[in-house]
Image (cartoon, rainbow, N blue to C red; front, side, top):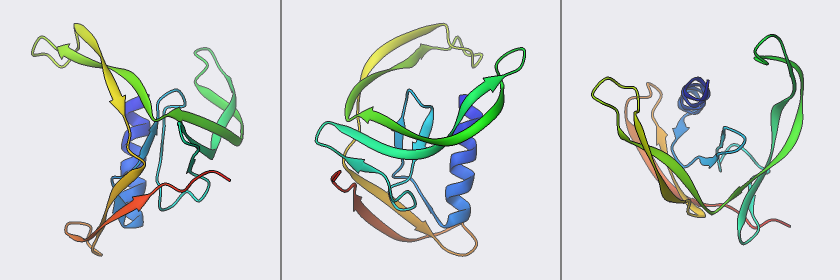
Length: 131
């Protein structure tokens, strides 16, 4: 499911003409783009954003969204994440390691040409302070 969300975020950002620079909100399994999301801000320790998320799930595996709405999400600038250290050569991870995960307030965004195959501009975008 997380791979599907990541793929969708990449496709959507590519269609819009810019990619990279997303802030990863781990707990919410969401990537927020500093150019297209005007609610993204930084309060000194955490990134905050207001996004459309599923508020209620149902179904046998809790995989069907029955209610969408706006939700405020938070991601610490400094956190940890698990990375695969041994996939056994088969693409299925057998051993994980917890590593430091730090996201900069300054994001690097690539803008692509009309065909989406060539970077025409790179820009540094600073996530604004929360009011």
